[in-house]
Length: 393
Image (tube, rainbow, N blue to C red; front, side, top):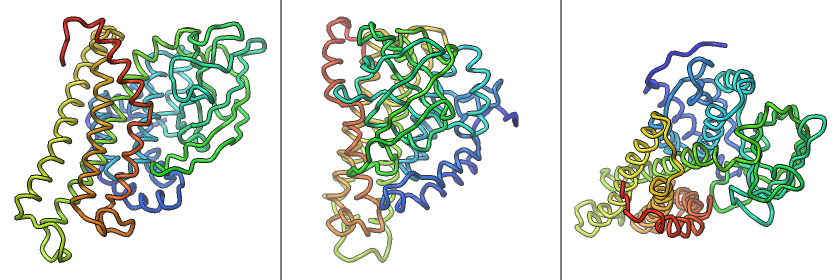
C-alpha cells in the first residue's frame, strides 16, 4: 500500500480526471453503460479513498473537499460523479461506524482503489425509504444475507456492498441493520435493467444478493441503523448529491455563456447584447448562486458539528440538510430547463448539439426523484413543529 500525503488535492490531478470523464460522457449516456474509463481513473489516482483517513492510506479529506470535487467531476460526467459520490457516502459509514476489524481490513483496500462500494437500501414495495427494511437478516453460521433490491447504483461493477436488512425474522420494520459484504462473499444476480431518461451511466440495475458474512461486518449497532444514517449516510448523501447537481448545472451554464458570447456563433442564436437574454442568464445564475451558498453553509454546519462530536439528529440540522437537497434538486433542474429554452431547439434540445444541455436536462430531472422530494417536504413540515424557534441557517 502506498501512503499518500494528507493535504489539498492537486489541481492538475483533478483537471486530468475531469478531462477523462468529459471525453467519455456522451458515449456513456448514448450507450447507457457504466463509465468504466472514468472509474478506472478515479481508482488509479486514489479518489476512491478521498474520505479514508491517512492512517489507512487514504487522502484524509473532509466534507468540504468532497463537495468541491463532486462539483468538478460532475462537470465532466454527472453519472460518474454521482456513482463516485455514493461510494464516498458508503466509505464515510465505514470510517465512522464500522468495527475496528472491518476498518483495518477494508479501508486500506478502498484507499488503494481496490474496492468500489455500492449501496443496497431499496426494496420492492417501499422504494428508497431508507429507515425500514423487509428482507430479514438470519443468524447461524455467520450472518446470512438474502436480499433483493430493484435499484443498486453501479451494482454490477461494485467490489463490495453496504446492505440494509431487518434485524431478524421477528424484528420490526424499523429495526434495521447495516452490514458490509464483499463481492467474494456473495452470489450476485441481476434481476432488472436500467433503462431511464437520464443518469443512464449509473447502471442502477436490480440485484439479488445471497451469501454469508462474519459478525464483525455489521456497521453500527444491530437494529439501530437509524443512528448511523443520521450521522453519516443522510448528511453525506445530501451534501454530495447536491454538489454533483450543482456542478453539472454550473458546467452547462459555463458552456452556454461561452457559446453565446463567442464570435462566429451560429446565426439566429441568442444575442449577448439583448436585455432579454441578459435577464434570462441572470435568473439562471441566481438559482446556481443560491444553491452554491446554501451548500457551503450546510457543509460548514455539518463539518463543525461532527468535529466537536455533536449530534446531527436534531430538528434544525435535519431541516437544513433536507432543504439543501430540495433546493439543489429543484433549482438546478430549473436552471437546466431555462438553459434549454434560451439556447433554442437545435442547440438546447438537440442530442447532436455542441452543448450537452439536452443530456444535462435529462440527468437533472432525476434529482427530485433520487430519494423522492415528496418525502422530504413532509419530513420538513413535521420537523418544523419541533423547531419552534425556527432556527435558520
